[in-house]
Length: 121
Image (cartoon, rainbow, N blue to C red; front, side, top):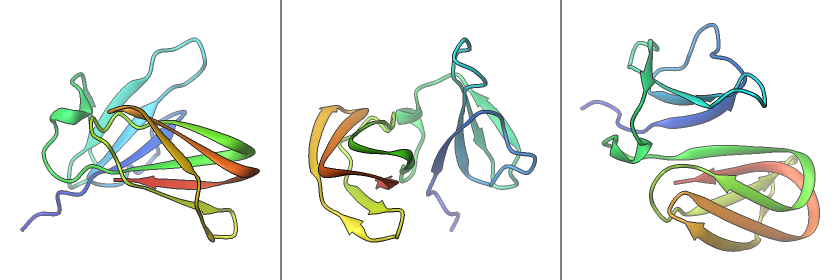
């Protein structure tokens, strides 16, 4: 049985060796539109012109918050209400107040500012 889990990454350019079964949101600069690519099981990128919600299989998204903030706005484009797990830069699980703005966006608020990652699925 094939792995139907899809990973998501926001990048400035496609990596030299893209990961298989992965979605990349590529935004080269603030003046360019986001281009979306999905890679096949061999890592070959395929431009996506359709909504990510139409892709079969489990969809998840990893968000990286580089600068410390007590409010994280996460646009994931998974077209579903997601479960959210937050970890700080020390890999400790952090609990925040989650607001579901839409099927494609959540806002998470914390007591203090920090950087880390959010895992959405």
